[in-house]
Image (cartoon, rainbow, N blue to C red; front, side, top):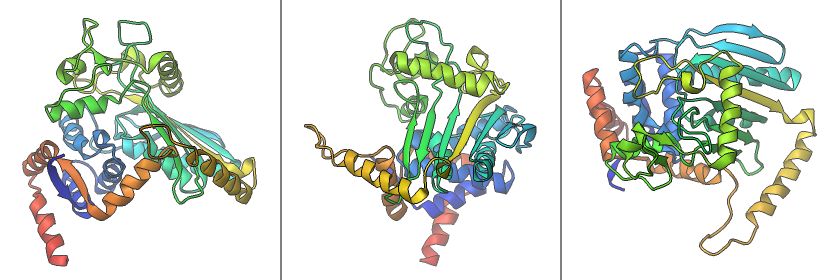
Length: 355
C-alpha cells in the first residue's frame, strides 16, 4: 500500500493540536488516543481518517464542542450517563472507568450512555478493563444502515460489540466485531481511496448487490446472517431502548442526515475474582491459550491466533515503525489542518531536531 509513514508521536501531537482548535484539549487527547489505537491495531476505518468527519459534523452543529455529561441514574452497580450530544470517545472512556470503579468495589459494574455520538472501536474500551484485570464489555448502536435478516428495509445499525478478557501472555483476549458482514467504516474508507468493495458487503436501495462504495453507502449493509441480525437487535435494545437513546430507524445517518445522532452505548466490567482466585484464573487461561494456539492449522493458514492477537502484534510493530497512512487519508488530514492553521510539517521538523 502506498502512502505516508508517520511516527505515532508526530501523529498524536498533530491530531491533538488540530482537535484542540475545536474542543477542549483534555477531550482532544482522549479522542486522539482512541483513534491512534485503532490505526495501530490495523483498524484504519476507525482511526485518524475519522478526524475530518468529526470536525465537519461539529462545525455543522451536529456534535457539541465540549462533552457535558449528566448522570441520569446511579446505583452501586449501574449508572446511566447522558452525553448531551458530546463526543462519543470522551463519554465512553468515562463510562468504562465508572464501570471498572463499580466492579472493583462490588464485583460488577454496568453503565449505559444516551445522547452520544460515534465512539470509535469498541475494543479500545474493553481493553481498558482487561488491562486492569477485569472482563470488559462494550457495545454501541449506530444509524439504521443495515437490513434485518430477510428484510429489504434498514432498521438496524451495524451495532458492534467487544468483549475483552485479561490474558496470560501480556495482552488481553479481545473479541471486537460488527454485526454486519463488515464494518461500514471500511466502505467509507474504500470510497475515500477510490476502491471497489467485495460483493456481499452491501446492497443498493433497489436490493442489488454492489461493489461500488458510493452506491453501498446510499444503500444498505448486509447482516452477518441471522445470527448477526439477532445480535444487532439485542444490542440496539441494550444501547438504545434501555438507555433512552435513539434506536433503530430513529438514528440519523452520520453522513446523510443533518441531525444529531444521539445514540447509545453500553459498558460492563466484571471482577474475575468474584468467581475464581486470580492466580488460578491465570493458570487456566494459559492452558486455554495453549490449547487454542497449539491447534494444527488447516491448509492455507500458518497458525491459529487468539482473538485480538493479530491486532496486538500489529500495534507492537507499528509503535516501532510508525503508522502507514493511505495517501488519500494523509492528504485529507493535511487539508483539514491547514483550515485551522495547524501544519504537520512543524511537528515532523521538531521530531527531526529532537532526534
